[in-house]
Length: 281
Image (tube, rainbow, N blue to C red; front, side):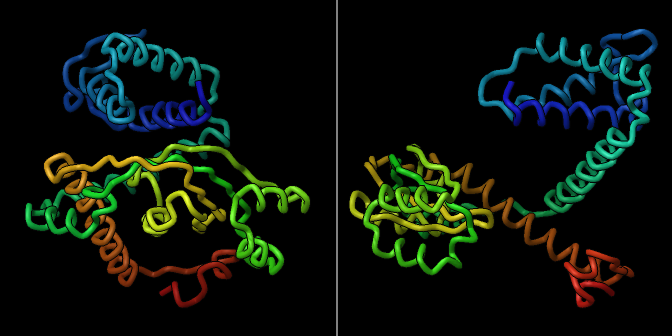
C-alpha cells in the first residue's frame, strides 16, 4: 500500500474513531454486526462504503468494506485496550482529525445553501475556455521541477533564458549540485495549471514553458500533443461541479471573514509574527 493510501485510510480510521463516540444508536440505524459488546450499524457501513467509493475509480466490493469495518472495530478495541488512545501523539492526531472534519462540515453547510450553476452559465464557461474543452489536448511532456528559491539566482535566470531545451538546464543544475526532479509525463489539459496551458499550446513541439507553484519551479517541454476535444454535453457535469466548488470557496471565505470581524482574536509568539496585528481584532 502506498504512503498516500496508508495516510488516507489512517485518517479515515481516526475519523471513524472520533465520531464513533458521537453517534447515538437510534440515529445510526439498524445494527449489522457486533464485536464483543460494540455494535456496528448499517449507517456506519454505508458511510464507509460511500467514502471509499468516492476516493476510488474502480467499483468497491461491499464484502471487502464489511470486512474492513469489522477489522477497524477490532483494531480500535485493541488500541483502547492497550491505552494507545491516551498517548499524546494519538490524542493530537485525533484532535487534528476532529478539526478537519468539523471545518469540512462547515464548508458543506455553506455549499448546501448555494444554487447550482445554470445551463447558460455552464455554456459560457465552456465557450470561454476552449483549451479545456473544444480545443482540448493530451500532452506528452518532459518535466523538470526545481527549488523555488532558484528564481532569486541570477545565473539560473540567465541560463533559463538562454537554454532552448530542458536537458541544458538539467546539465547546469547537476553541475551546481542542486536537487531536482525530472521525467516524462502524460497530462490532459485539465491536469495542467491553467496559466501554463496557453503557453504549452503556443510552443507545442518548439520551446519550453515555465510555471511557478507555491513550492517549486516547473518547466515543461512538449514532446507531442494529440487532440482530445470534449463536447458541452460531455463536460457539463464537471463544469457544474467545478463552478459550484469555486462558489463554495468564495462564500466560505466571505463567511469566515464576516465571522472573524465579530470575534476577538489575539495572536502570540510566532502567530503574531506570521499574521501581524492587522489580522487580529
